[in-house]
Image (cartoon, rainbow, N blue to C red; front, top):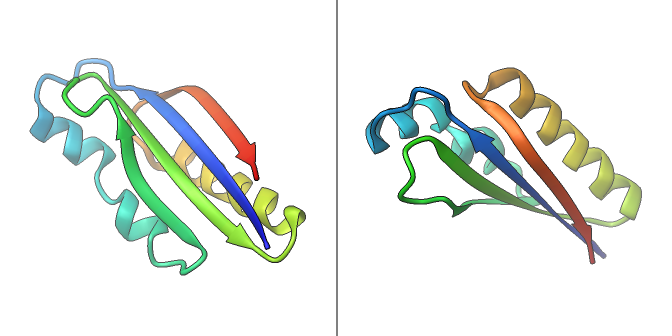
Length: 93
């Protein structure tokens, strides 16, 4: 069993309220939490309007599967989130 933690930090330029932030970042749980091998949470920048940090914990039988799943998550977020990804970290356990 292999575990990977993907953490992504976003800049949300022009975002003026927590409500707007949730609208722009919203749906992370629905998009990625459906997969039983992925756990999703907002892990930082909770009270900042113009920034957000999300972590994804991926579990799979092989390191290659974990890396593939992390890459798929990262690619999808790059295409769908209304903001800029400013930092990405991956940790394999």
